[in-house]
Image 1 (cartoon, rainbow, N blue to C red):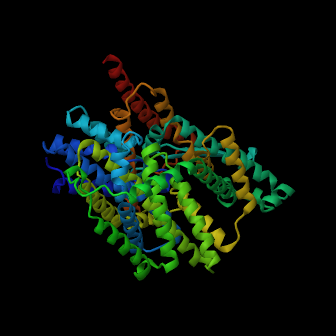
Image 2 (cartoon, rainbow, N blue to C red):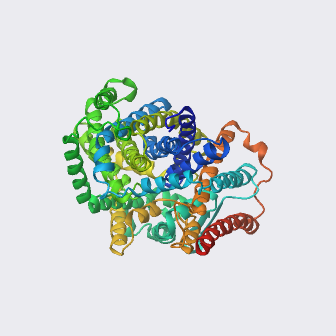
Image 3 (cartoon, helix red, strand yellow):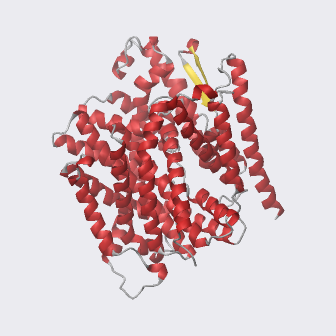
Length: 604
């Protein structure tokens, strides 16, 4: 059966670059990323089986394997921004970290996906295999994904390109000490809200409301008081606007909350992490003999795996473009190896979405920062070194978790492990190649770190690294955030989504709830693996993000002003109606698609 073919590699590479750009944009805008495995598998079947009238289940599996690498690699690339590296250095770090994650995972493949089949469910890998098998039988259509791509892209183009309506509503009440509310009503947020569900969306919204409806008014009232002095607030804080208060003070509260949420996620999973590390190391030390040479058990050569790992480790130190000392390279490899081994097994138990990547990365970053500071690193150089090490670790963790799911999916559909491992490397290389270009294009168009692209994870990492190196962290604001995250955890809320909501602009956190409520309305009555609304939501995200990146090119070139059909200044009431109406229609359409699936299931 055809498997590792030219058409599969080309299509997978294209989707890897596309979904990598989508997740880079999404990570900078929301601080969250989405899995591309199922959407890319459905797109592959739609193109190979639907349009080209050819393609096997193994080819489709190669396509989704290569494609999913792009989105997982992008999840870590955004951590590099704080160090302000060149585009070429972004490529080097992303490609090296991605390859390290793949190579370090390969020796664990047999134990995790075969020996422990009964113990490790691998939820995303199993779901993707279900989609591929169903599609091979002709029961899965790619139409919802293509429809979502078209609608999301058209909506973004008409809204931001032609300026027929605004994308953001925001109001600050001066009489209520700058209490602020707002929402960014776009297909991207509607789709993300549907995928993450009502509970996570509501928890993030609660964090956002606490920041913008409670903390900002509280800080505005506290200027010049003893409490304000303890927090480090300026005596003229009342002269600041809501957004300035948030960026100057509240975001440090959010940073403390995110750090606490990450630490709590590590503490909760620490027994699992230690168990995973011990069992995986035991599997590494136990060889399985050379007689087992069936096609479905052929991995890349152990010599290639070991030699490649050593070569990449030496390259981190020896190649000048990496700008890493021997100590930095060793820290990167040690943290990478530990967390890759943990991640590769952990995703088998709780899935890629649920693994605490942020918590593990924060742990690696703080460990690196304090170690480098003890060795005399300081200032911008120390901050850049810390972020570079954290970026390597984060990319490797994300890619290792992704390849674990891909190899499990391959085991279920009868794929060749070596083909998938080579495919992952190709996907990582091409996704890394476009990473720097996309980041700098978005920065020139929208400014990374602005309200348009807040880059919450990157700013958090930069804040923590800079604070450790310069010794000037606003500790009282950070400890306030730690206390709020701990209180949320005590109340039964998931502290990390709550903390991210506290750290993000209110226009982001409030926008997810619409999609979450639609998902809640149809929860329990839909099959996620074959739900057309899930595929439609994925398409909405991809279409919105891809056109957003294309419009960034127009903004940089200055052509965006030629496309604008109106100035979007008809007054707050009229603009509010014009903004709400198309979003409400889009939300209703998503609801109807989800309801149609529910009706079909009930009839069957």
